[in-house]
Amino acid sequence: MTRHDRLMANGNTKLLPLLPAAFLLFSAAVFAVAQQTPGVKQNVRPATPAAASPAPAPARLPEIDPARYFYEFTQPQFYVRHIRIEHDANGRGVIKFERLNDETVYEEPVELSAAAWTRISSLWQSLHFLDSDENYQSDRQFPHLGTMRLKLERGGHQRTAEFNWSNNKDAFALVNEYRRIADQAILIFDISLARELQPLNAPKLMEEFELQLKRNGFSDPEQLIPLLHDLSTDEHIPLIARNHALRLLKKIEK
Image 1 (cartoon, helix red, strand yellow):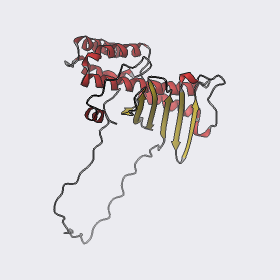
Image 2 (cartoon, helix red, strand yellow):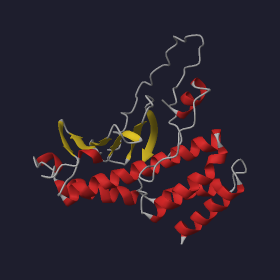
Image 3 (cartoon, rainbow, N blue to C red):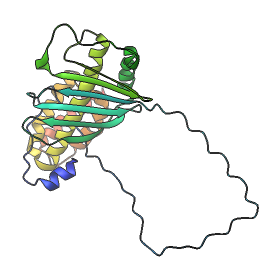
Image 4 (cartoon, rainbow, N blue to C red):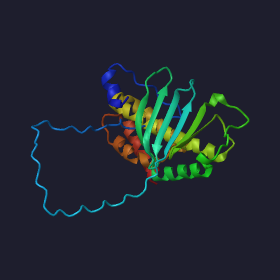
């Protein structure tokens, strides 16, 4: 369900509460559908040249990694109770999430920055994920923290690993990277909704933004620079929020 669908279909939809500190994002996905202009069908076929030269062979495209990467988090009692991130080898994909006492599945596009993808791809490689059968679950169980799943698909092969706590430093670091992606994306989503529907929530969201920034809770703060520029000049939100956005912008740009 895109943001436009939610706004048009649910006129009385209440603005969701602020995210807890652990959570965070972006504009709704827009899919373009090409339409053919109706007209009179033409059956006249152009004449073929008598001595047509063979068409040149198309340039060979570089090989593209067909892998699909997945991260999933589930804890039914958390405010953001379910998160699913899926992306390709270029770091482009979607995030879907669900909130407590809300059956709506929110979906937003997500694009990993080059720096974030470098860290994440390195961790996947360190795990040798498809070639390994390691159980990442530690002997100690922490189900109250939620269940995490990692999945990789490539060339007809796939593997899923599930755990609530891991002593494998690379597996633990990988799920933390995805958590930061989710926190960043969800906070951007909430800021966008506030700007459209309830601007008075902007000051509190700026406080949440600063808290996440101090905790190193974002996947890549530099991705947020354009958003902060927009917020600092958006006269629809309170001046205190605009000034806060400007201060945060200066912190990131140092």
